[in-house]
Length: 139
Image 1 (tube, rainbow, N blue to C red):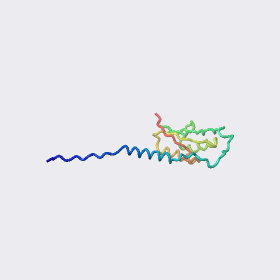
Image 2: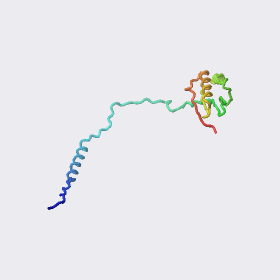
Image 3: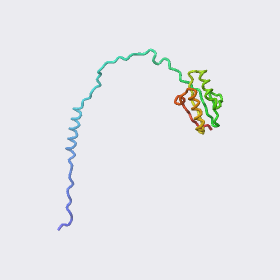
Image 4: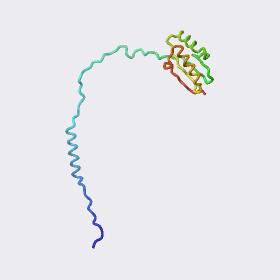
């Protein structure tokens, strides 16, 4: 009497026939693939420009409105009082009609001071969105 369980035979996968099938599929896909060339539907002649690339418009130079760490206001290098800021901006705008401004402030600038500056800008006819703000830490 044999008490050991019988081992089942491991099924063998015939790899040779699978390789044959793979080669046949590869030949089929290569033979049926169509390599389309790019077809031109409409011939277009683009216009040429004589002035293209000649003169580049100069970049906008912005005058600086600075709020220092000590909450002092400086407009284009000249110190200005917060109460007189709107009048100073209007005067600068009258001297240079196409002038653009940028705001430079310290990171420790009080929000109240920024509100005063923005109110003065609106009073002078500038939109807050037209005056970019650069807030940096001065050491």
